[in-house]
Image (tube, rainbow, N blue to C red; front, side, top):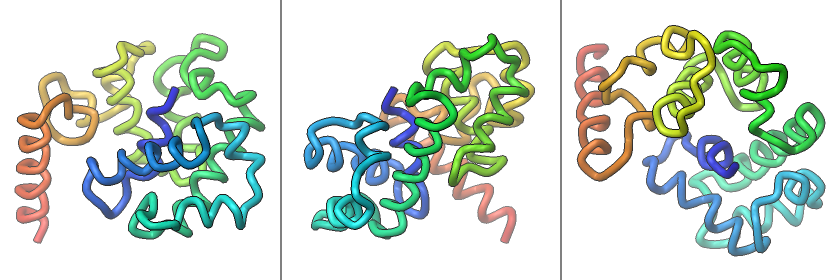
Length: 168
């Protein structure tokens, strides 16, 4: 499952730029195996991540973050990210707790990820919409969980812009 690597890079840059970062790693490493990334020499991996075009605006920091996430997935889930939502048939609250435990994931990112797997992958543990909060609302256009095409991307951007204007 590659989606977690995309999601890890979705910080402080446009979604489509962030989601291109893992493709750059794929091309440079020849795949996106969490075990390979976890075991990569940290300096060599940082060089891969920062070589122009870098995987992220903050390539060095993101390299550390991606590698920490992969190490965690190897240590806790034997490198199988899907165990986060399949191991022991968890409820959505358990899945949310597991997501929040991932390096670089907080409450909001975990809820968005839960909404994303529920809406786009059909992974819907009991209570997933409630656990995902507003991100789980059917038909909402709040986050990457709702982006399926160019039109929905623009709707999410408009929602975020309006929410930011309201907060200011």
